[in-house]
Length: 260
Image (cartoon, rainbow, N blue to C red; front, side):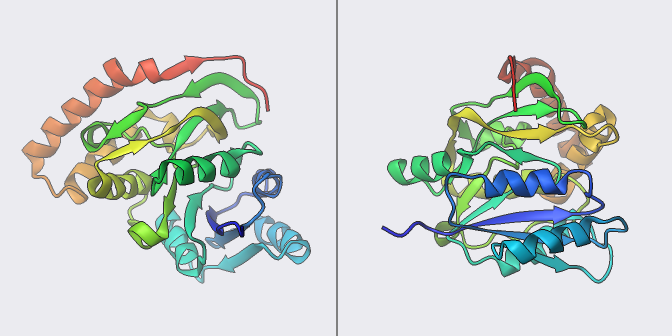
């Protein structure tokens, strides 16, 4: 039986230090029926030339370039417009997948008749060294749980285009992934995840994810722009969000012995 095509959405910007590893982690997948659509957001380093060299040898790796620097959301939407797969998956240019990632998740979706799933993942530092931390999530994730905390690692999520269509991604600077998964959970109400780690999330030294203040600021903007809450409503939701971050979510972060 012919395998379903997976379209992998990858935005890139000045990613020359990491893009080769990211692409190789896709090329090394045991599930080989994929296309990797990379949209470069006007990189000023050698990112484009590196991708072009790889694409010459592997036609499944496709490069498109934006005419002006527009942000991650615009890049992802541009890649989404080019996607031909039944399934949409996401991998940023500095993150990595384990070799069995696609095979495990696609099989899990088919066996359980699911239009969406995600998985645990592990954290690495900028140099690619394990931080011995695995990020887990509720086995059955509800919309209400996701409302107060983004438990879905973007590098692990996969959805079925035949069920959802192509889900447009917000153009705001950060947290587009959270809004996308909220759109998914609004429709299906609950999500089941693969209870194993299938990817590595790279924590950059200067990343917004590393800054708690910036994280709070961008999450507040989600309550204001995506949920369209007034100032009081958004503030109350942020109190719920902070409670989740401080009390509930830490139990899903495990110390492990990690290896790449």
